[in-house]
Image 1 (cartoon, rainbow, N blue to C red):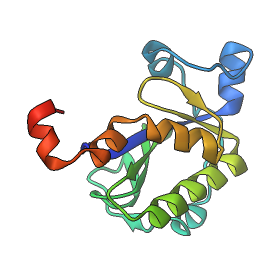
Image 2 (cartoon, rainbow, N blue to C red; image 1 turned 120 degrees about the horizontal axis):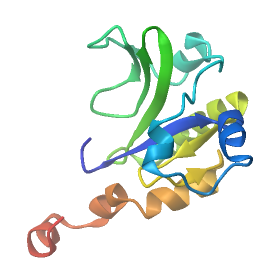
Image 3 (cartoon, rainbow, N blue to C red; image 1 turned 180 degrees about the horizontal axis):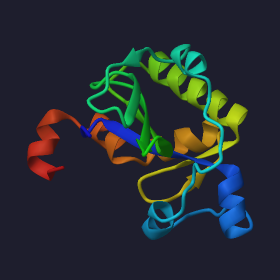
Length: 157
């Protein structure tokens, strides 16, 4: 992942409630990696995803990708034909309206399918624009985008 990109994992709300009895504010890495979050959860129609991002040729039959290797992307990871995890990446180098439209599309997809977002620190975010925008504003990717190139050499990454 490039410095100007920020990733989220998608997790079905029903699986969080099943595992924790509620939707927690945060999960540990072990919690994220251990349960079968997608077992028995219906996948969205690929045509629905292609309204947001075009399909991209994958390097593996166990990975389905929409979007761009260098930009916004949605990735489904499979093992033995069963969906294991879903990730999406936001490229903050793009113009604000493009980033905003992609985020709104991912929020709509998440709401329709009752998914939550999980950031790299394990913070669970409900699918609403204010939560995602606040999280993005605090991200390393946004910090990088707000930093002048000369400051990077003085302050470091």
